[in-house]
Length: 159
Image (cartoon, rainbow, N blue to C red; front, side, top):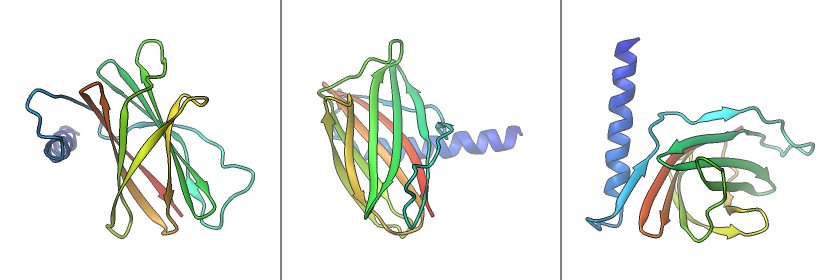
């Protein structure tokens, strides 16, 4: 058990180093990373209309410093709706005005970058990912809150 825990810590550390290397290069910026290798996932029921290639769904949540991050990937015709909730950890109050980018690695290894726009009525950030390929999609959410970097890693499967 300790060996797998050590290997997990090493993998997380290497991932954090790689993600930090992709930053802005500003030496004074603060980067907060998720401390969890895998976000917790709550149960989710597939929607009544299931697409031809169903998506493994669920709300993935992680705590990063004083922040609560939630990621949801929902199937839609021609792709996946990415919803990201950036909130305070204590009160789960939405944090508008941040710059939010998703770096997505598709199952084929293709890299895509999406800017997530803030949806004021829904109090979250959102973008549409054109995606028809089955398999695991890895997502790094890069957030800039008035110069403070808050990043989280998530994944979802499209079947």
